[in-house]
Every structure is written in structure tokens, then in C-alpha cells.
Length: 80
Image (tube, rainbow, N blue to C red):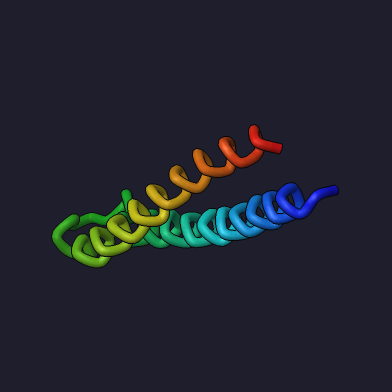
């Protein structure tokens, strides 16, 4: 196996590891948002919407990074 191919495999592994980290982060944000936006609350003005918004912005950032990584992985794996 040549050096370029080994380097490419290493890069793919690194990106997959990062994608796994992002998936864990996303799961945490989704759970947190779901808990904050409790659908059975009697008074929605008591909900911590500002906190949910902050969590949603972070989830969006993670989502964008994950989508970009998936595109990069597809290209890299096609090169193998």
C-alpha cells in the first residue's frame, strides 16, 4: 500500500471520528431542546425559550459541520 493511500485512509478515519463526536453532540442538544420545550407545560411563557434558542443555534452549527464532513468523506472514499 503506498503512502498516499495510507494517508487518505488516515484522513478518512479522522473525519469519521469527528463525525461520531458531532453525532453525540447533536443527540445531547436534541435531548436538551426536547426537555426545555416541554409540550405539556401549562404556561408557555414559563418555558426557557432563550436557552432552547441557544441550544438550537449550537445544534445548527453541529448539523452544518456534519453535513460538510459527510460530503468530504464521500469524496475521499471515492478516491480510494
